[in-house]
Length: 417
Image (cartoon, rainbow, N blue to C red; front, side, top):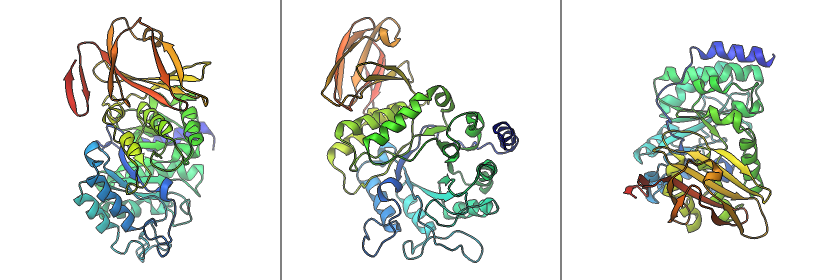
């Protein structure tokens, strides 16, 4: 089927499928199992880390007790490998009983009792990516009803072992089925990632009527190269992707890997800063039970989170790629504020970068700036005044900028400056 025909059929389907349940007006925040724990089902030899109800209870405990929930990290999301290899006698998905002996409904109650929300995974193909039962077209309605009956709050719907025609039908049908349950559920679609992520094969205007968020590109891995590959793809294609994002409809560059093994402290700050600039979901995949203080401080940075969660929901853009291998990113924010990120792609030493706000398209006037990761105010800046910053290799400098004599909100307080 050609791209035009596919788009036209999707348009016909979407007219009756608009997913407008008021959820995710800002990007979702929480924790997901996949990148850190993958498909570890060996609960005999690795009971602390296998995909089981114990792992998700542990993470819920940590989200509440270690201050994550109060910052907005509210979703606990099960990824692949939670299912039994067989559906039950009524044709419903069921959890693997040795690893989820209490059932998903009781796990959901545990999560809800902590003031959190539960997410779950399904795949619209014949099998999930790891070979567990899929949700083919005829199973969509019963699976949506099952998830609702369990108290699920968020569905990640993958697309392994499916084809473009089934995807074109199945993703809108699942949206309609979720709506029909009467239970508000956030809906994460992997559909664009299976179509190359870009128009004309992906119609983002229509997708925004069907899903709350969508995976556009390849899975993240625990490495700086993976982070950079994702960043490059998103900003190389920002003209197509940036307009698609907004309240209730988000591009998803995949999980935060901060606190794992592959990033330095500077690289971890870079991922947090760039995900905030992209208005990306802040879904961590790490071990919250074993996290060093530097990773915790980055992920719990209140100003970076506030920038990410800005209610305007406008995705940021890359402004410059300098010959010096410094890149500049900008995002407009509420109350005439904005955010700037200066990223170093260098690998040698800290680099002194010289510029002015006027050179970055700021209007004439005086501005205040707050250094997000240093936690300090920058001297007053006139738009035409040159300034110099030092950016570490593979690191960032991130500023929250606002006109002089306005109110800045940071660390949970409004401060009249």
